Amino acid sequence: MTTIGFIGLGHMGGPMAANLVKAGHQVIGFDLVPASCDQARADGITVAGSAQDSVRDADVVITMLPAGKHVLSVWSSILPVVKPGALVIDCSTIDVDSARRAHGLAGEQERNLLSLDAPVSGGVGGAKGATLTFMAGGAADAFERAEPILSQMGKKVVHCGEAGAGQAAKICNNMILGISMIGVAEAFVLGEKLGLSHQALFDVASTASGQCWSLTTYCPVPGPVPTSPANNGYKPGFAAALMLKDLKLAQEAANSSGATTPLGAEAAQLYALFNNAGHEGDDFSGIINFLRGQRA
Ligand code: NAD
Image 1 (cartoon, rainbow, N blue to C red):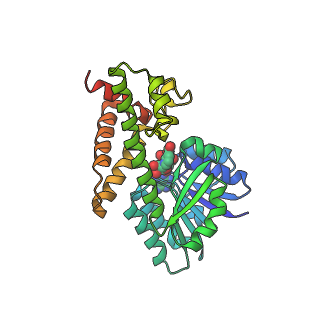
Image 2: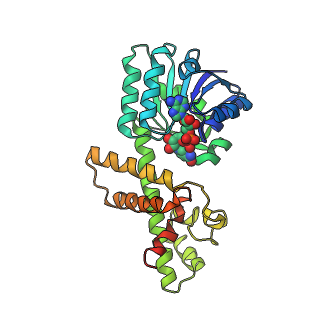
Image 3: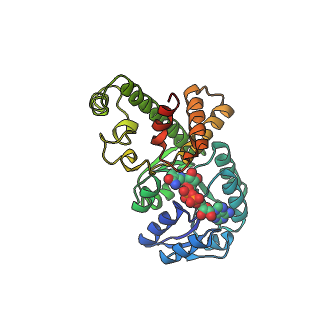
């Protein structure tokens, strides 16, 4: 049993912390929202009165927060009071520069703290079912200590490299996802105009060189993949607002690193238009309806 401090008990953090309780750990949690704290108590988490109080006795600390500014603010406040030698893991999706700054803050403490950035993919369903994929960045000893704990919240844990590499892998993967979904959606829209049935295009492309996850798992038209959000009124799934967040993070990273990502930039623009048209809460595959509307 490990004593784990867990800060950020929202849609993802709440069920992740609950899975750590189920695995037999003592979890001391904190969130600013009283309703999240109530749910956490019901799941067996001890709720502390502040972020600092949630980490004082912890050997491992996990944060699951909205964005880089929240992570840097929370880490700045808790690092001075965590136990020497503690392992601090951030599982939020944040920009690579902030992730590296957070590792730097842990290093500055000079108390042998270990730090890891370990964003996830798999969504709320993966958080509830403990089937998340973790992408970790940080030193080898931090990863070795984190892996058994992360494995209790997920099905796959990958060490991607040094500080920030987990966030880098996450935004690169999600940039592929955003671009590929638009590509698949455009192909179905073109196929419709050419009189091609959805099923015929699916049967060909899913076994030919157009094959990809956006087509075979998350098909943006109803029918060919019965479990895809298209069959359920485009309820998420993976909300368009989160796709836009990740595409913007990819563009920030491209700008600061000097990478050329024209399709990533175009995908960010299209998802911004889709979100601004009132579809933030729709599944990101719903962009197909928006693309049809562009010419209607
Ligand atoms: P959420 O908004 O439901 O949860 C974030 C929680 O952090 C909230 O409950 C909020 O009250 C809390 N919080 C904010 N500032 C705080 C502070 N200073 N102290 C304590 N608590 C604080 O968001 P979420 O959906 O759980 O996502 C969390 C992170 O995971 C985000 O970075 C998101 O991009 C990433 N993510 C989300 C999904 C998803 O499907 N929801 C999938 C993969 C990754």
